[in-house]
Image 1 (spheres, helix red, strand yellow):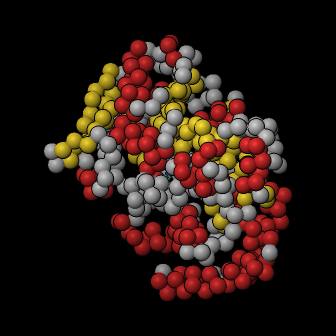
Image 2: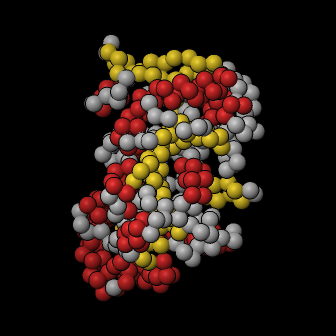
Image 3: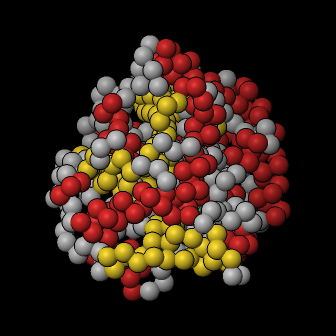
Length: 425
Ligand code: IMP
């Protein structure tokens, strides 16, 4: 039986939480494959609002097994707090599975994330300061600490002593910070080890056995395509691979296991942190979009930058992820505007680009080529069938589909599960 991948097609915050949660109805496992607690999902079911950072969406279903895969970076204190909060809301989290291969975010990673951002000054990336970049950097440098190290404290301490020597030298000599003590970290992490023990599993084998048994597996990406370390707007990216390819390495599956790749695409575009954004709005329309769309980060509370829909980005995401369909979110936010704009191409030095430019300087200086589309100026949050949408709203979705080149299978018109319109295949 197949695995499905859910991936953000823009700069994150496309509404993956809601989409994944809805799709989880048909699956047995939901797997987070990369990133860490830099992500934030808001899920609303009935009167319950859940804010998730690390625990996979799908945790709301008692018959779904949530999995934190090998490719994730995990801050154990943050995860345990999140689990406590979910239990307080009445959820059973006992079937969560965590890969021993996932890397641990350590206190020096968080500190280095903070001080290096400060050091970069105006060149800063605008990270979430959760220690994500430094943890992935250590993983690549082969000095990372893994979840499985928690279960051999002798090894844990040996590795920690080696790595901390270098981190403390950097913290104190380069950044003028106080050094950290290995014994304090060991004590803190030994407590986490005991609390996390019931959740640790061989997640790779678990998923293969599940697929062989005919179960459905949903691989849930965090962040989005343009924040991908290899395929995003480098260096203004995160340090992992949110794209569909990352789902395979991050979960330990092969391409033959996957038969659907669902792109989560917002009806307009947002971005948090620094970096180029061709359709960004700096005017009153942008202010309004931020407010109506409630575009503030789930994790950091930061105001998101907003802009018109960018079809060049949508086409790029369709290619780089091999999308089979789109899930369009937040169409209702656009009800607030009379005329809508859609970017169909970029212009740079007199040339038009309808595909993602191959050099970042072009992307940084590209201006959008817009087409105007009529708005609908009507409340659509109560609509239950696509055909009941105002004809302008249907035309907007049809045009986005045509420009993106991949079918839009679902359209979301509000934050609740019930506010989702399914279109015919
Ligand atoms: P980091 O992932 O904390 O290292 O941050 C790197 C960049 O990715 C920054 O621009 C962040 O704002 C952005 N970023 C990280 N996670 C998310 C997310 O879940 N949604 C949107 N942007 C994110």
